[in-house]
Length: 275
Image 1 (spheres, rainbow, N blue to C red):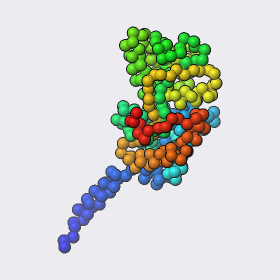
Image 2 (image 1 turned 30 degrees about the horizontal axis):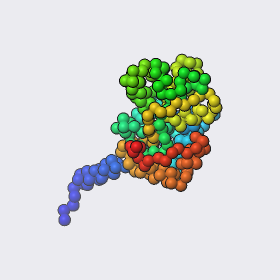
Image 3 (image 1 turned 180 degrees about the vertical axis):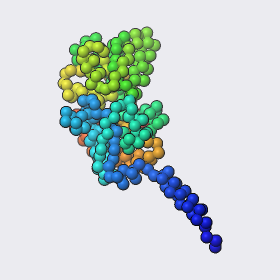
Image 4 (image 1 turned 30 degrees about the vertical axis):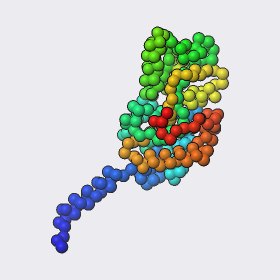
């Protein structure tokens, strides 16, 4: 048998190494380095995720991030990132995944994959408790609504405004903010009339300031929180899905939600795309 020329051996070895690298998954990297890095935006004061005065990141998602890292057998590092740039930062590999109260949407799913839902992210409006002019969704006609920049709430609020106009009601004005605290300061100062955000996040603010706010239901949204993971990281997605599904089944997720939200959310579907 003729021996393979040295050049062909080198090329073959290179191709094998390249093929292995091309199919390597971030899950392998996480286990090799011993740390799971997670992108978060903890600038608010809600129960989903927030920063304590000393800088410690706490909340439902902080506990669930710790659970995932524990089940993977690695340490956890949460990387603070401004919300508008958090998906670009994931795609540029600044961290391994995002678990920070992110709603799974079709638009985002064009860029990332989402895990099985771990929370109800349906949108509500909220106003100060003393605002007698706002009691129902129709009362938002002609009002100014604050929403967080870079979230699905922006598009939903614009669609909500269009529906109001179609009902011959004055369309509300949608104003965007970089963070939740700024929105609430503006509403408290009566510079805006209401805010629009996921129910669990609003619930966290209401727990911290009892009697200060009221929720306006009936906006017509049904959505879920999911972990965002790069498209190519299918092994990491599968591992995260298994951990979350086990947490749903054994009551761990319900316990975390009760701790931070006061009660577990309603039953969740296996996929965020299910009704």
